[in-house]
Amino acid sequence: MNNILKDLKFEELPDYQSILDKLSKKGRIKHLLLGNGFSMAYDTNIFSYNALYDFIENLEDSVLEKLFDVINTRNFEQVMSQLDNFIEIAQAFEANKRLINKLKKAKEKLQNSLISAVSDLHPEHIFKIPEKQGKKCFEFLSEYLENKGKVFSTNYDLLLYWVLIRNESKNAIDGFGKELLNPRESKKGEDQEWSELFWGKNKNEQTIYYLHGALPFFDTGIEIEKEVYTDHHYLLENIKSRLEQKNYPIFVTAGNGNEKLNHIMHNKYLIYCYEQLCNIQGSLISFGFNFGHYDEHIINAINKAAKQGAQSGEKLYSVYIGIYSDDDLKHIKDIECKIKCKVNVFNSKTVTIWK
Image (tube, rainbow, N blue to C red; front, side, top):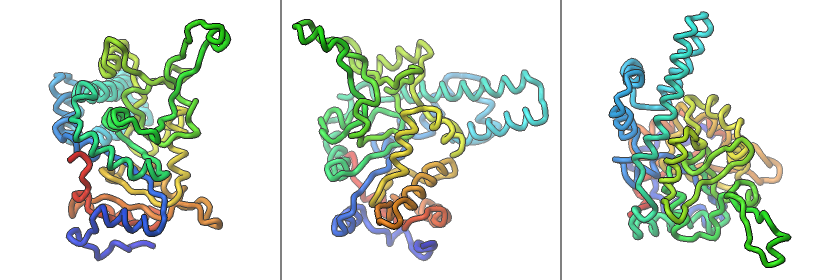
């Protein structure tokens, strides 16, 4: 199964539609994995690492500036991974507690700044996405949602959520719902009183999974709550109000794959989403997800899905990875052996999500 891609060249990659046609002929269920490339395809000026870095740089925080200069990268995951290493080394050699605390605070500040950056750079509200672009994206997603597939995203932003809400997809279920608080009283004619929007009520029908959390999701310590629009404020305004109160959304911003998985395993919503990825069957198509050094936990989930049901045949048979360049292709060739099912690639430039 290894080295299937060995002699393949970028110009020889199949287009996206041919992948869909191939899987359709096989009658294979398709699932979708979205990475940051999904959001960058909408607007690279907002959703690239460089844009986030430039935002944080403009905050004029000397500690963060020094960290990025020393580590010499604009990759947030790499900076946080290096910070974890610095902290572990400092603790192992019993370094000054003041230094250790400074490193821990720097990491926390970077995480919180990243959340603020995503929020502030984000389009203001759902109607900032042109209707034509939203419908085009919905067509792309419907290929999966309308055919018993699931959509997994590692993105924090609201683009996926907004597209699905605006197009009123009946099959896009994120697992959140409200509970009627006064069923007896309402039967007697009193006004119905509803709970906040909590996760869990509809999880058995769930088809949309935010593997690393998202801007509207908050862990209250008891429930996973989704922030919503109100009569007077857009959704992003309500999220920013929470941020100002030091109430941060569910965001997996740890460095390496193990750190991310550790974060996931301490939150019931994230655990559930990850376990669903571990149990998919059929084929998985990825777009804008590079299977990088910090994504080992995603590869491990794919491998678990590939091992399940080996006797019955109810398992993940293959992954189809979108490729943007020769460098991307070389990277996938290098890690092909880590993925325990058939690895295929296609030209991501042939996918028209927003246009």
